[in-house]
Length: 249
Image 1 (cartoon, rainbow, N blue to C red):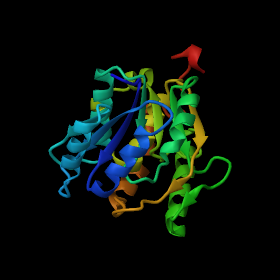
Image 2: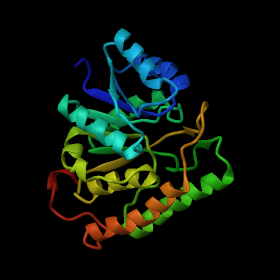
Image 3: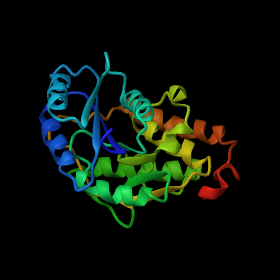
Image 4: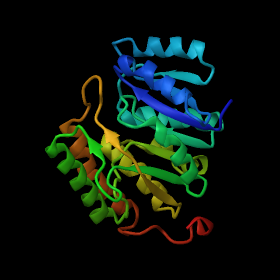
């Protein structure tokens, strides 16, 4: 393992973005490894990933046989990361909506945190290329999550994150069944409610340059009901359970 940092990139039909994105990541001033988790993309993304990995020792590929959703792809990637002993484990979209140049700031924040969330709404709105209705939906979802669960974060549905190894080790990954927005909410809640330290850093989110969005009505409805299940799982509390990790408050 050349780096203690792993960037997990789930892909489905991201062939146009994959080459430029991996080059950007490998050119960062901090050393990172990359895991491409491809859900059997019909456009040849998986084949391209293999070609990149054959030329770049820092790039790895995990092939899945079917498109099972973002949550399943990330959980498979997390399991792989833990098996290979990475310390800092990132979620990152494969469409350039997340800026690779933000990764050093995440790593700096993660030195004293268990989970770092990239926030589009911390101290202002930083979203490019979204229509107004999509922005309203996202901001309303964030407020809804805060009201139901008590999590104090400005952007609980965001997908640009850095986990410390110990945070993922405290999650029963096979038991996670959500996808999309609800997956992002569920993992953050599972970490937060244990009393682990979660911090936010501001990011600029730019809607995808290539391809089409994978947002759907099912993803929205899944997230709507998920927050109530999380509230119940936390004993109908809107705060972390006390004294689980007293040294990480």
